[in-house]
Image (tube, rainbow, N blue to C red; front, side, top):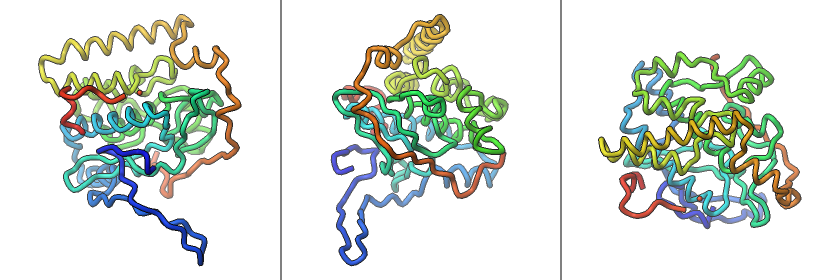
Length: 290
């Protein structure tokens, strides 16, 4: 945590070990704005949607923080609305790196089962190796919640939930379609972009930032947004034809899996179940999100 210094990552301040109780105490930056979970619950109770400008801004900020982490070969692996905090100015701060994983220089994939079930990515429930696209999936789940004010995947039990996630089939597409937000924003939270079950065909964090950049540029960014969508369609077609992209190539190339193996298995169940790499160059349009 100490090594991650970014405007949209909760800052590590200090730590000490209480010798009497053998408890490690960690002091982190205070975020007075609460969490995105609280924002969502407030809007649900009020029957109002979250302002689109805020959603776009948060997407750029989260994407920037994740791009920074991935450039340093760190996967968060437990992204959820409860781990995303708000500072006094309404900007998001990515926190709780308790189960993040630093990938070694010998491997670019991991295989430990971690995270919160509602935000789990298809690779892990299908017992496949995973990398940066896992965090991109979680951003898609978070975005869906911000737009529809409900989770995209739920189930009567863990087996039903896992089945839906493994297939990338949202519990209710009508919730997203009828949320009242623009199609260009809803597309990001769909199975055509961040919630693509196939990691090889999933929208990447770099693509997400280019898309957000295009939106921030106004009318002049339309060509870039169209280009990102075209890339996604090409990836979908390639995946359908059995042509792999990044992740498959790494696995088939025989990366040293032994270097990424870890023994713990951690699945965190929420207290209340649901009801149903590098930084962008300076001067880009989304620098406003930093």
